[in-house]
Image (cartoon, rainbow, N blue to C red; front, side):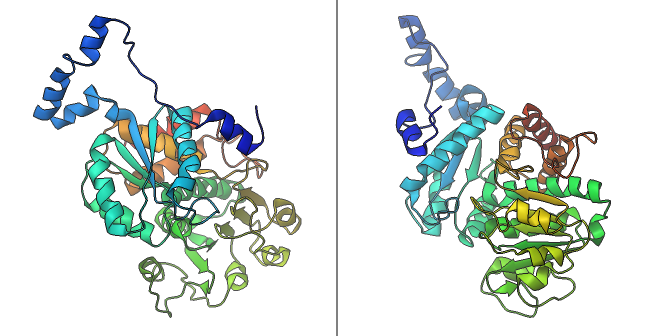
Amino acid sequence: MITDPISAHEAWEGKIEVISRVKIDSKEALSVAYTPGVAAPCLKIKENPESSYRLTRRGNLVAVITDGTAVLGLGDIGPLAAMPVMEGKCALFKEFAGVDAFPLCIDTKDTEKFIETVKLLAGNFGGINLEDIAAPRCFEIEQRLKEANLGIPIFHDDQHGTAIVVHAALINTLKLTGKNIENITVCINGAGAAGCAIARRMISAGVGNVILVDIDGIISRNKVYSNKAYEELKLQTNSEAKEGMLIDAMRGADVFVGVSRPNLVTPEMIKSMASKPAVFAMANPNPEIMPELAKAAGAYIVGTGRSDYPNQINNVLAFPGIFKGALASRASDITDKMMINAGKAIASCVSDSELSPEHIIPNPFDKNVAVKVSQAVSNV
């Protein structure tokens, strides 16, 4: 395999392609797959739109949609430059869950135009995966598309996918440390799409105290924010009313979750945490603190977003199975209960005999993960 990314992408000329599911090799086959035979399913769908799930690929097709404003750690690079990521996401859908996906990179930063475009396209798909849209616009876009009752699930993976896998990591962390979820403090650094969603997931899971930190410090109910998400979360987090910066938030915390920038956490900060601290430093490609430093400073469990260290907290463990389950059950929404179940399913893929500080999260290539997550979602 070519290891240089540019050479590889030039050789591939794209990571996905459209392949026909039917063999059109005769006049008879042509007449069934296209004209005149295609008229019959067309009229059936006109009569009953729901039959589109059976008579077209819609029932196994997801749109991966972005505006290119928050691509990986690269920021606002635009929709065209986002295409390699969206293609990669589509390849992961197919590889890990057998779900077909198609990239759509929309060239607008106008929220109204973006929402209207997605609404107009929604009927072609069984689900919508929103991707790499900058906060706080991403919150409004997802919420309004859900409220539009399009009849298919709308899921912003940068928010919920990451949060679900962090939840799975927390479940197994608590098994190892013997701590109770209602008694722990989770400090989250980075209050963008992922950070806010992780905070909500931790609250929903029953974490006793969540402290959310952005570049200006701890999110506090004593402050007024222009960001609507902050205004909501300040009333649900920081139960001890801490003030200050990240160094203050981490003091006494049981778990650190980083979705921010490299090298923000020092060994001294790790040493100030509670006993058996867990550190999920997920900034990519370089985490908030390198695992070796965190371990040397006393971290009991360390996870990152990287594949070259143990405990990779990667949303590829979540979104393929979630959409597989949602499509199979013809869900019109991906609910909070589905997401909680997905986190529990991911955690369960690491058996008690396998569980260790270096193994709290299953390998992304474990074929059981997507199956278990799909079942957990479709059974809701």
